[in-house]
Length: 115
Length: 114
Image (cartoon, rainbow over the protein chains, first blue to last red):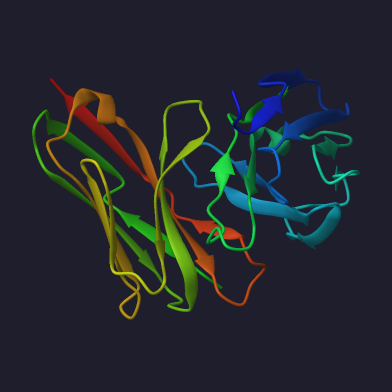
């Protein structure tokens, strides 16, 4: 399978714990995005990387959230001191960048439940 | 700020019907528009991408049109099948913002019954 992969697929944690999610983009895609989706809503943008550079962060990304893409390949999203309001589906997408019209391809998501 | 609205929120039809899903956006300065399909509890599958200079795109039984000046797109599904049951999401990539940041609607939940 050469699509976007995410791990874990599901995560249940207690309030106050830290969690980390991983995203592996399609090989050679230099753009990587994180979105969050709550029930009944469309995905909302969180942050965007071009190669290893984090170029934009949404206001949704509080100081408890941090994302990295250290070598311009996979990315991690960490949430510290989780709150019940963090419960959502976290989606990762990648895009080839220039010349591709920036079509985004999404992974299966990580479902986070904070108890 | 770009606002994306999808109508109807839900649609239930018998198999074989031709369908039209609607998407509207407030800022016509877009780079492109994508239609996605999402099955329950799953990620998004890209269906069609229309560049701002295009009027429509077709893939199999799906046809998407774009009227950028009026801020509207429609997704036409021909001869619907039960396997088409899913939520359909429209998203725009606004020119001038971070290239690639998508603004999504809330989706149309489609049920096609046999």
